[in-house]
Length: 304
Image 1 (cartoon, rainbow, N blue to C red):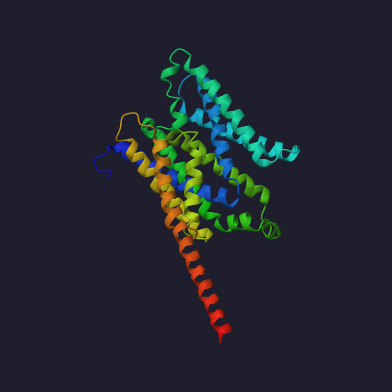
Image 2: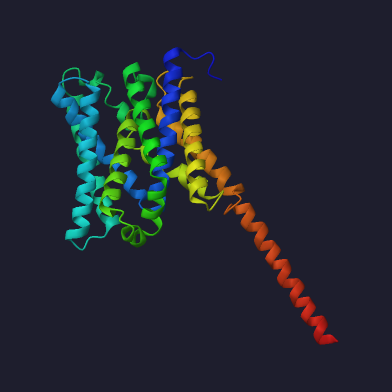
């Protein structure tokens, strides 16, 4: 499949594979933490940071723009925490507020930049829906390294994640700092979003974090297996979406990755061995037959 692709395209394919795997792993943590909306919020919150980085540099300086995205996303996370703890606003409402405000600010800044001399050629529009083909070799290598770091962090702290997500009180009793685990979780979530927004885009990055984890959940109830399956689904979605986007000129990568992930989700929803619709239907039919057989046996016993 990849033999006819250019050397750079093959590196891009590898980077979106690792990005998809990292997103699947972090998305699983968000799913079990019941904070899937957080990934959507921080993805959108990263946009104004990207534009500020561009304005500070005066040109497309990727390291500075990604640092700006990280700062903006972390600020969004801190504001959500502050609003939730200091007011009567619930967490989901706080997330909705931050998402709307930060994304609106990002679009306003993007409009301003595009009206600047040469702003239309800045390539900042690619951060909306993602364009992996626009990534240069340095971008690809950094993405691969950072995605690998995220995968290692999740793997090395596997036992701590289980305690943190399923029994935080017991974890505290063992001496595990919940504050530090929350900080690490937020940091790796922001890191995945920051390294993925150029390839997938700020709007659709949330889908790569949410869909693989939800899809994996339809196949198993084991946390370990959900992590593995989610990483596999995310990696496969990243590769397939990137490969299809390379077949056309200027095709955005993000939508194709999301379509690939959504297709896998539909298969999981229908045929998943844990909670798939087909399995649930068969189980209900079996239960209905058992009820009918039991009712018939009672009638026979009464007749005797």
